[in-house]
Amino acid sequence: MDEGKYLEVRMLGEFSMVYGGEVVEVSKVQTSRAMHLLQILLYAGESGISRQKLVEYLFEREPVGQSARDDAQSQEDAEEDDSAG
Image (cartoon, rainbow, N blue to C red; front, side, top):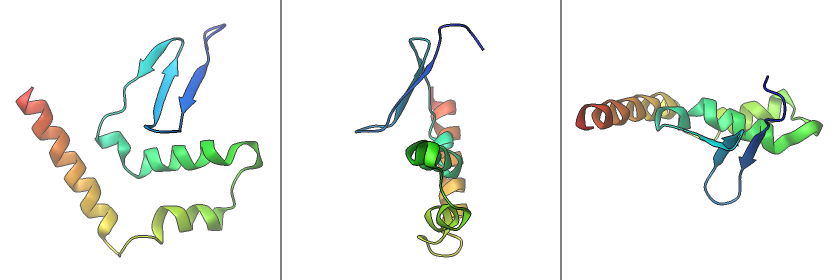
C-alpha cells in the first residue's frame, strides 16, 4: 500500500470513492450486489454486522430470481454502453 494514500468513501448523496486524490470509477456492472455488500460493510463500520442481518439486507428484500435478472440487465446495459462508445 502506498504511504500517505488513503481511501475516502462518500456515502451521503451519490456513493463515490477517492483513493490518493483520484476518483475510483464505479461502472454499472459494479453497482450490483458486490457494491451493495461493500456499502453495507462500510456503513456497519468497526462494530460489524451479523451474518443474519447481512443476508437479510442482500437477499430477503427482493422476489426470488429478481437479483439474477437485475445483474443480467446491468451486464447487458454495460455491454451496450461499451459498444456505443
